[in-house]
Length: 114
Ligand code: 5GP
Image 1 (cartoon, protein in one colour):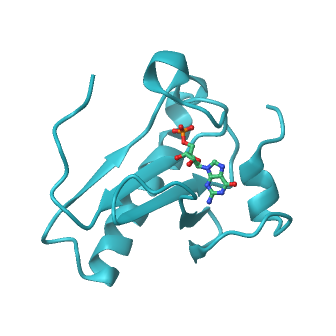
Image 2 (cartoon, helix red, strand yellow):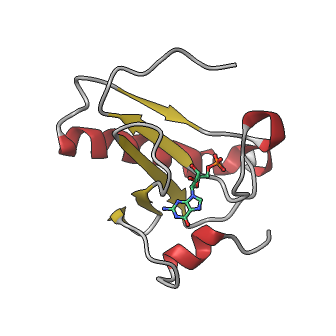
């Protein structure tokens, strides 16, 4: 997998507002937020797209979702609600080819766009 901007953020070479990190993943605020809360959760195991994650590595993706839920609970908006999204390839709108999960919250969100 090629180097991405998220590797540079993880190494501190590009500044970012990192809100969570553990041995498995790190999370930081999106530079172009699409909601009042927009945080990206990135695993420390690299895959370019969701298509590249083998079944036996499904926990890598699962941890992103549960980390987002724990963050929402810790920040106090879990009961109001939130959305998690993973974009895949061109039609999915993926622009950074290192898997990541978007957490969007902080206001009622519209239905899925077209
Ligand atoms: P994708 O479109 O691949 O699902 O999501 C990539 C996300 O990364 C976009 O929402 C974009 O705004 C965000 N992003 C791209 N470059 C940077 C950056 O340098 N810093 C931060 N914090 N977010 C970035």
